[in-house]
Length: 166
Image 1 (cartoon, rainbow, N blue to C red):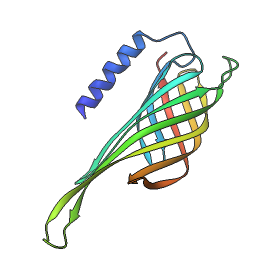
Image 2 (image 1 turned 135 degrees about the vertical axis):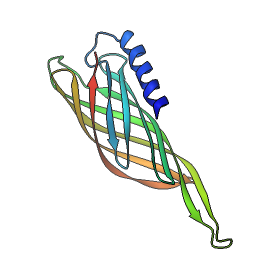
Image 3 (image 1 turned 30 degrees about the vertical axis):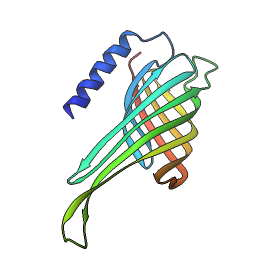
């Protein structure tokens, strides 16, 4: 966890130094696109184009779930003074998990692990508070490929909160 925090601090400093003069250039916060959620970083390439990375390294006892994802957002900004910005997005991610499993034949408990690919697309709105805090709500469609192309797909709801440094 210390390595993640240190990496985020270095990333924040590096991107803040290179930040452009566009609306909400660099933000850090929390993003939820159910069923996954985690720490998030947003960086505006220009006024309309934003890239976002989300990382969710969570563990509870022997169960571990990790999500690493990236998204491209296109903001429909027509007026810089507008506080409500609609956007569309497309994203990809990798989910991996490790969980204890009981083997009926041997009676032993072993770890079961798997990784799978996910993708999503949708739209949302972000409301800007004092130019430094962004609250977002979104609706989208996504699919989690579990094995051999089989997966779980459906409509999902999400939201986020980001503090914008510049």
